[in-house]
Image 1 (tube, rainbow, N blue to C red):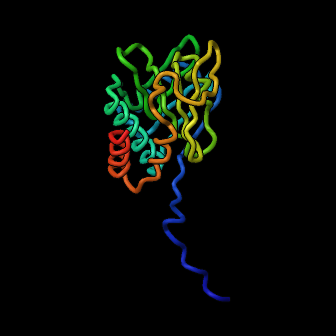
Image 2: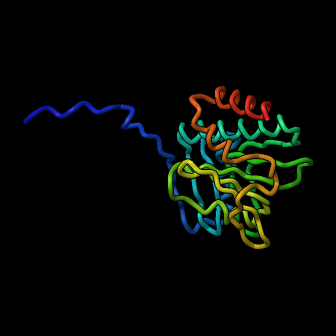
Image 3: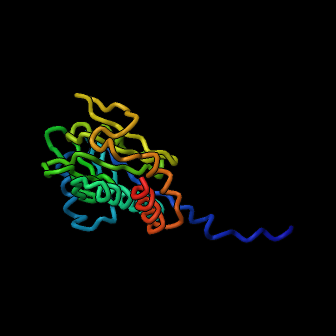
Length: 200
């Protein structure tokens, strides 16, 4: 029998988010999980009506969300938009049995109790419905990156509606940001963004 071909370690390490979902979890246990984790951001915790998700984002997930965040922040800076970033702020409301830690979240102008904008990277399929969680937490808009596309959802009463562009930040071209995510590095993406904005 011929020898097996050598396995490419990079192929074996195709990064995926590690996720566990527990059912029939009461709110008290959700808060206990947050307390046990402490200030570490290694594990992201979400809660939706008795379901608890523990997710460790992969390196690729974190690299992409950081590049996306840096582009949004640089864009806002270049345009003079007052944008306050909070990273993966833990948002929770016991009365609606929801809690989440978006990949990134922002307030536009003066900060409130809930960020105006949440950004979610869906790197590995599955998991709790983050739009449903954000809806009842009072987040006004959610941007979702999935499979190379950025989709904007704005809250309309009791639901989120897909929008062609951001209502909170209409001056930000999400297609431009999406295209710059393919740059070879975060620094290269930022340089290209600034160059394009300063040309216009």
